[in-house]
Length: 143
Image 1 (cartoon, rainbow, N blue to C red):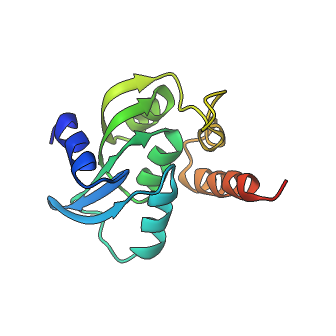
Image 2 (image 1 turned 120 degrees about the vertical axis):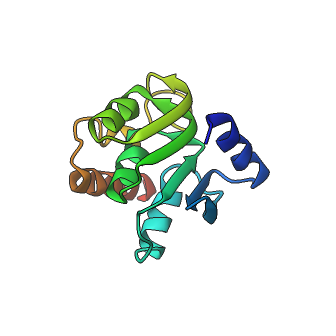
């Protein structure tokens, strides 16, 4: 698969995240951030990781580590971060991106995404999962 085809697949399905198994779409989502991966992880525990391919609109390090935790070995994205690329190399995951950015920006474009920030200093998949959920809990908490 080529990144251009993956991008077209996202647009055609009006999705932010698509998961394929053996070339067939088994999951699509229009949620943003890491939510599509968390939902897939929760609702598709019985899916064997063999032949899974992730196509996602943005892959930061947090999304990369969640994908690694689910044992994806092949990922396509229009945009990835330097941290995600480094972790993919270390974890032996094929991360194919059209553009590599220094970091994933937060929703107001004023700094780094807090979810990506939560995993900057780890490649441990369980620690990353805990950090991601804690960061989400803090973001969702009433001020």
